[in-house]
Amino acid sequence: MELVNFGKRSDHEQRGRCRCRQASSPDDVDGTTHTSFTHRREHLRGISVQVTSILGKYKKRSSRTLDARAQGTSILQHNIRRSITAMSNDTSVLSPDDRQKLSAKFKDLPANEHGKGWNELWKQGTTPWDRDMPSLALVDTLKNKSAILGTAVDKSTESRKRVLVPGCGKGYDVLLFASQGYDAFGLDVAPEAVERANVLMKDPKLAEKYPSSSNDRGDTKVFLGDFFKSDFLAQTGGKGDFDVIYDYTFLCALPPSLRPSWAKRMGELLAPSGHLVCLEFPLGKEPKTGGPPHGLSPELYEQLLKRPGQEVEYDDDGYVVDGRDSETSSGGLVRIDRWKAKRTHAPGQGKDHVSIWMHA
Ligand SMILES: C[S@@+](CC[C@H](N)C(=O)[O-])C[C@H]1O[C@@H](n2cnc3c(N)ncnc32)[C@H](O)[C@@H]1O
Image 1 (cartoon, rainbow, N blue to C red):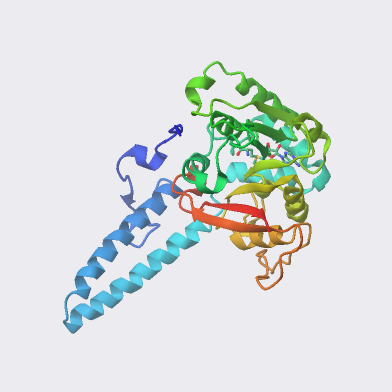
Image 2: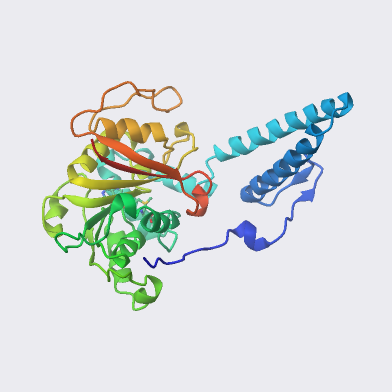
């Protein structure tokens, strides 16, 4: 299967060399200050590698002095790791300006009016989630997980499998699925997003940007509609029964009160042998910092999907309370695979995971 290579170098890589400077009020243990968050994190990673290497050398020697120095180095290494983890927990998935705009937009808006909020953001051009290309993690999933997902065209019926991408925005991932041979449906509640997606679907350069696989290209349709309502289903030719549903930056866009309904709806719309693919994002963002995007965790996905429609319990910091012992309810989904995405959009790099779920 020929898949598109959307590889893009990060800003930090493109700069080519570290511009960190010695400063009077340094950010870091080695007295440097940094031009950006990414730069600081990359710099810390660099120091960590150096320290690990020094530590390795010390460990090969036996003198007590060296052991003491090695211990000091080990503490330094521990502190650096803690700094990197703390930075990973930072809310940096958005710039402070975008973070403020998004949280202000939804702060006092009742959940049933969020659609309006999203449409306004699209209209005013506040779309920091829009990466102008499909998710690299999805490109890799379609390439590497055919043993689970099967082929885009059902061999027994010769019909194309049907995919739903809820909260699809401009629909890059819809186009990617179609390029691999699926019939792909995008759904968004914001008229402005749907309008832009429909312009994109007619882009004359599409065949170049999304070369079709050996399965030829499937159909694409992007609908205006609310994921929680059924109006859009008539246009997809049925009651749902999607072979694949792909969730990326959708669950995290919803207010936490809608999460149980999100899980219930996923269960309802997924065909009995279908696969729900979740690109888990943002992991490592503290839930109490709010959203969208709201910080998520693998435990949260698991508890929501194992008992669709049921409330989950949160602790004071907004993390879901452990419910591993509870039974999967009838209609529940089970996780059949999960891995860390090697390639993904920059804000999730090193943290994003992909999980695949099926009816229990
Ligand atoms: C953060 S954006 C992500 C867009 C797209 N997935 C991307 O990554 O480019 C979330 C999208 O979900 C849409 N959305 C929010 N609530 C929705 C709902 N109930 N039904 C359908 N779409 C919804 C918004 O309009 C918005 O375009």
